[in-house]
Length: 183
Image (tube, rainbow, N blue to C red; front, side, top):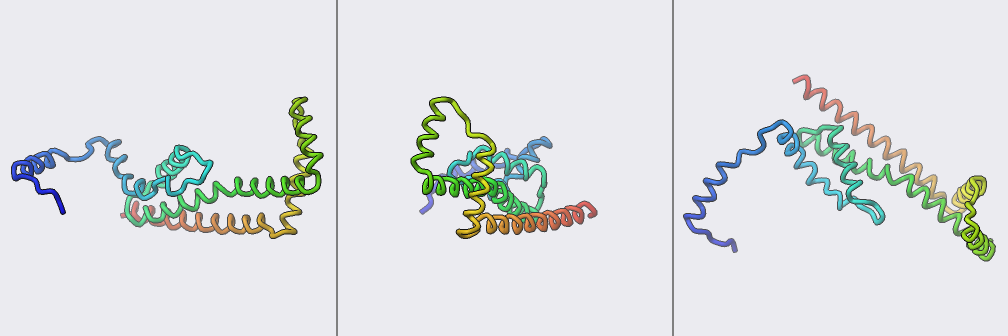
């Protein structure tokens, strides 16, 4: 049940509402013009453990500034483009995770004691694993992934689909903006 206010308070509220006319400067108008899309793209909905909310919000804001949606249809397209873009940004991280997992699994199974001793010695001596070892292990991880389910192939397929979707949406947005500009 809504709280009842006095007639005096109601009149005061109406007088105050008439004073509020919105932003007057170009910058102020530009800022509020993005309110609808920014509220629809609350970064907390897109965040994954380990990501920084501020970085993700900054990325979303930069895309909105670059794509410049001005009406509901353009906002819907840009919203989807941002969703796809966030997923695309995660693919290299996922791919690195797949490689790291496979390398650690291999080392854990084949060389558990040797690897533990090597890491211990390396830490004590300040030795860094050479790039050749990293390249060998990455290749090995790729081969293991191919044998066990091909997560990298699946990830690349997803990446291709996301890129295709993004550029189709961009093409639609550009056509809409061009049409708007010719009116």
